[in-house]
Amino acid sequence: MMLSLINRLKLNQVLFVSHLLLVLVIILGLSWARYHSEWSSRVAHAAALANLAMNDVVGDISTAVSGNSYATMLMPSAVDKFNNINSLRFFDVSGYSDYSTKPYGLRYFREQSLADNEARSGKVWQTQVTEAVLMDALAKVDRLKAVKQHSNAKKVDFLLNKAEQNYLSLINSFELSLNFKLPWKQPEIALDGYFLDSKTRSLHTRLPLRNKNGGAVWAVFDASELYSLRAEVLQSIYGEAFVALMLSSLIIIISTRWIVLPLKRLTQHMAQDINEIELEAIAELKREDEIGVLARDFSALITRSKLQLQLLKQQSEVDPLTGLGSRLKYSQSVEAFIKTSRQQPDYFGLIICDVDHFKAYNDIYGHGQGDIVLTSVAQAIRQPLRETDGAFRIGGEEFVILVRVAAATDVQRLAERVRRAMLEQQIPHKGNQQHQFVTLSVGALAVDLRQFSKRIAFSQLFEMADKALYQAKNNGRNQVIFSQYNSYKETS
Ligand SMILES: Nc1nc2c(ncn2[C@@H]2O[C@H](COP(=O)(O)OP(=O)(O)OP(=O)(O)O)[C@@H](O)[C@H]2O)c(=O)[nH]1
Image: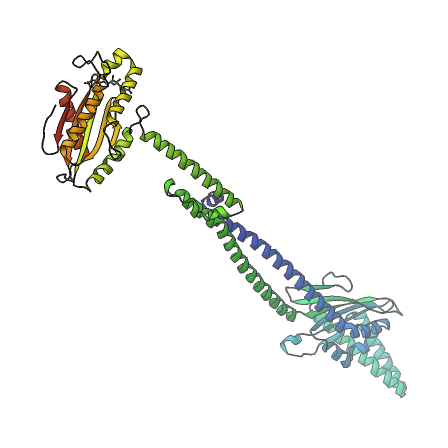
């Protein structure tokens, strides 16, 4: 199916389609590579900017983790600091305090990004709050309340107040942890690495903590701004690819035409009749490339063919035995002969000569000798003719003379001279008992071209001359029977 489709295509179509496919593959490949590198570098740049913005916050968090302290991180000023980081939506801190083996856990989440201009405040909470921790904090409050009943010391008031605050904060964190559902899956990324989540359009980074026991901050940023940049990148790449495709198509069209047009012109030359081909008009002959070679080979072939045709024509127009015109030449010349004759107010003569008893001659003297007689007949015919007259051997021993003369009797006179010229050669012919020499019977027809009707076909004129010849044979041979078109006379 595919193969038959390809076979049906023209050369220029194949060239165009194959080049276009090649160019398409190259443009797609280059565009994809360019998009990939551009997009990757933009994402890397966005991740580096996000990490830079987190730098201060990571410092604060590291200090808090080091001292296992949550209070500073839960203060409104700290939350403001987190809120001020452009596009930060979430972070999760996991690490170990430097002074105890307790795990440290803190989370920040801001519902809406700043991208839609709604600067909502985020929430921060502790993540390692278990019921046991809550019970401990409540027990501490109860203990301090019991102490307060026996003491009015200000320090007890302060400690009780702090314990109550801590308890409330822990309850708050506990509830937040219970109710919070992560909108993202935590990706597996190395420290200082990043990951762009196309589904949620968010950029994830993982930053190391700077305290002794270490830990990491997983931060999530809103990436919608990055995606709008991607649309710009794509648009510019599409634009460049389109321009490249248009330019390439133009080049393909020009180069295809450059190859195919000369071939088309060459085939047009080839389709012409060989005699009408003008070799000088073939511009491709001057080309240096393969088309030039093809054109020169074609030109040499045409020249050779023309020469051979000319040779063949000459051979087919001449009777090889007698050197007179052949039957083919006769049939080609006859109409032209009448047409030329009709331009002048004179006579057209058609003379048919036939060797008498030639079969007998061949039988007695042999075929080779018969051939010599035929050349002698040609000689006898040629003698009285002018250059403008035509003489042909149209059959074995049958000859035709076409002449133009001023008077009808000139045709008769000419026929008579031929007959006599043959007789005068005195070639012995025992089979021609009446005359003893080789003789000719002649049928001659004169046509007055002023009376000549266009409606009469040349074959009818030939029939009339042939009838005269038949009569000459019947009357005893070695004689001329003369007739005229429309009038019929007889001489001997
Ligand atoms: N030698 C030779 N003979 C030829 C050639 N072409 C034809 N002939 C012979 O010419 C003879 C013609 O014989 P016919 O047509 O019977 O006529 P004819 O014997 O001349 O008798 P009439 O025409 O009635 O006088 C045949 O025997 C042919 O073989 C040729 O090229 N060379």
